[in-house]
Structure formats: structure tokens, C-alpha cells
Length: 173
Image 1 (tube, rainbow, N blue to C red):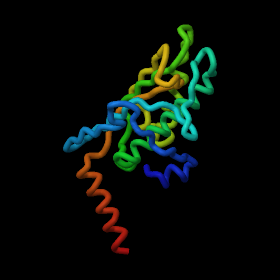
Image 2: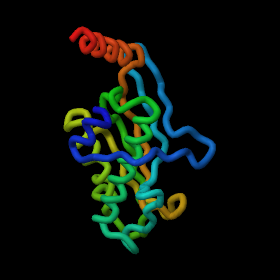
Image 3: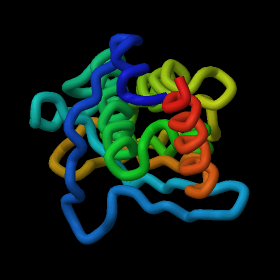
């Protein structure tokens, strides 16, 4: 999947956000046959502003699902900027944290906004991984949702080889 393919599906990625602390947004663990991409917690941003609120108090489940989808779009933007979406094989694990009241119990429904985007982008086979959806009393900046994830990516050597082979086929036409 690449930005052109996403655009064909009506999905536009925002500008990737910079880390707001002493950490990296993504970390590649390259292996010979399989590599992993760890993605730090991302929050929901729209037009340069965070989506703030508390589920069960100031936000509905629909609002929360929208926020979780925005987190996914931001995460995809970070992945595209750091390693390229065409290197991603699929998602392994997501941890969804929902800023919610003590009696709110629909965290999984909120994080479904993120999970549905992953299926839309990577397909059912590669877009569904393991997942946790938990409640938090507070999240940084008052954001509604924060999600961190792990992806399987193609090893760098294989990804480069595929790009070269595709380029070679194109250049022979």
C-alpha cells in the first residue's frame, strides 16, 4: 500500500507529528526474514489541533471512534515518513488507551475506529492483529484516545530488492 493507493480509496494522510518528548515515533527492528516496526503512542489530530475529550462525559462512542480513526491516519503518516507504507506486511498488536470516565465500559467500540482503518488499508488478513482497549483517567494534553502499535514489515533487503525488480521491469518497457 502506498499514498497513491490510499488516495484512490479516498484516504488522505495528514502531516506526520513530531515526537513531543524524549522518544522516537517509530523504531525498526530489522531481521533477516522478518522485521518489526514499533510505533509509539499517537494521539488524534485534525487540522493541527488535538481532539480532546473524555468518553462517557464529553464525547460519544461515535466521537471516540472518529478520534481513534484519526489516530490511525496519523500513525500511517508516521509509518510512511519513516519506512514507507509499501514495506508494511500487517499489524501485529495495538494498545488502545481511551480517556474515559470510571463507569464507561465501551473502550473496545472506540478503538474499533482504528482497527477498521487498519482493515481498510491492509485487508482483513493483515489488518487484524491482537489488541487491547483500556480506560485511562487522563491522557496527555487531554486527548481522547492514544494508540501504540507493532507491525510486521518487510526486511530492508527484500523491500529494496522488490523496488529494484519493479523498477527494472518498468525501465525495460
